Amino acid sequence: MARHLSTLLGDLQSQVGPSLEVLTQKEDNRFQEFAKRWTDIGREIPAAIVLPESEEQIQETVRWALRSSVPFVTRSGGHSEWSTIGDDGVIIDLSKFKGVDVNVSNKKATLRGSILSKQVAVALADAGFFTGGGSSITNSVTGYGSDQILSARMVDAKGDLIEVTEETEPELLWAIRGAGQFFGLVTELCVRMHPLSALGNDQGAIWTGSFVFPLERAADVAQAMKLLMDDDKYVTSGLMMTMAPPPARKPSLVISARFVGNLDDAEAAYKPLYDINPIVTSGGPTPIQNTSDAREALGAKGGFKKFGVVGLKRFDIDRFLEVVEVWKTLVRECPDAINTAFNFQWDSRPPKQPNFESAMSLHDTRYWQNNLIWHTDPATQQRVDELNDKSIEIMRGPDRAEYADFQNGTRTGPIELRFRGEGKVEKLKMLKRKWDPQGVFTTQLLD
Image (cartoon, one colour):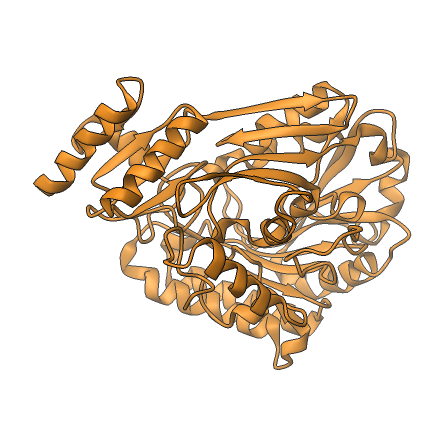
């Protein structure tokens, strides 16, 4: 770390006080632990990791960075590909600033800092509620996660704390609902809660299940899944995963299935799959707060991981089968990528439309190719990326009107694919010039 930056960090510590933890010793175990993140792709080591424990300390740290011309990135759960910076800058890590408050009477929850989705789900379920995730299994019931945002608090590019509400900053709230990561450091969100009864049963549960087929039956499974996906009589959703699950590592199609509604109807909803005789089936009610527990291992830090994502208007069987062949090529040529899964995500009904406008532009999208790329040898990264890109290109097809990019799934390619709709990109760029004209938080929307 440069001596100048070391002096500046000493100034920060003096200004804020001893309660602000600043990690600078890179060989120290605590520094190394906080330097870890979900993926090692592109991971850099910062000059320091700052751990504020209050909103005031966050604001003071941002002001110090601006005043001292020290670049920074913010990190909450550490799952973002972009939460990294080299030794010319610092990470503002919100691990020590987090919380959730539930207001039952107003059906609102306040989420602070680095609170994780599992922690939110448990707190809300204990009070008899749930909320929508980013793009979740309840999209057709609640809408997207950004549709739940009622207000926010944000530290802007001047270091000021902004109350973002319909009354105070309606245009900024419009932007935060779908593009919030581009305008400032959001310290707090107030979100809408939904009663557990909205899940269509009195158990606060959804039906979760799995169906496993050998990969050579991909054509049969795709035909059955096409029937299931097109049947909006039932609220089904989930992932059709091309993968080699442990411990046997046999190439398989694994359907991770979800059903929302009267739990007694789940088997009827998935009859097309039961009828083609999977080699393994399971299923039953799961409390809404536990529906992702089986995937917690995927959140482990380290390894070379990324997502390949594209939103689609339809399920094309021929393209899907072509992508299955790409996956076979990937694991044959790059055996260290055996944990990679090419996933097709569906919802039998479109996301619920909110009664307001926002930067979010995916309410016409209920299908996704959502690849989890996971390899262990950095030497194979180029080939793995090539095959991931090839699979996405196949699923997109030639018609640009048929696909969309997830807003925070990429920071390359035409931004119009992330924010579709007349005038939407232009409005976002105007708001970016107002709130972050120098690209303090990101140069997205300025480039």
